[in-house]
Image 1 (spheres, helix red, strand yellow):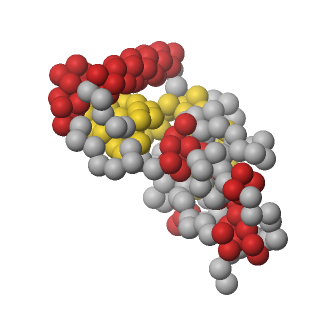
Image 2: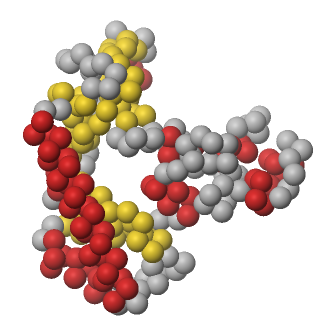
Image 3: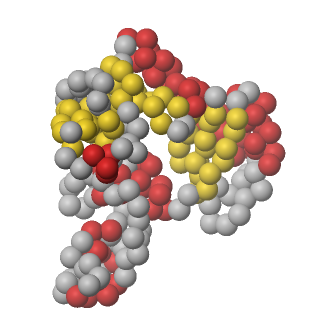
Length: 212
């Protein structure tokens, strides 16, 4: 049996599974996991359990260790750097009158790279902005354009049902949604009733409309 545990990186975010063969973790433990973009601090929301189908979890990354006070301090410092980077970038966007909306800033690779997520209607020439950011922060800079659904996923929140956004709590990828799905469920075709906070048709319309 392979042991796994469920870890969440945001308070209402998606639960990701990691191998916990070498360490016993319990619910609400803070732990450090290793991913492609470096170490991350997360909270265990599903304690160590056995997975019968080992072949399914062989490729899962592992929990490295329980988080220390130093890990938590470094995590808090990184969050503070993200807040400052957001404020600086937002000011530069306004100063340069760029047609873009800054959504979120995220440091990865243990602070060696920073990603600025933004939304825009079309293509944006942000070369001068990148120069400003690189000169200020002295780390690798990436500006990543996202759509309205991705924005909702990044920012998180609650839907009209009162539950956290599906895209931010368990959906790992978006699937096509059509008005036909609402018609098949005899729903009132009022945009305010069948649209999510992002303005797109609600993802949950597809839950009872699986293609045969």
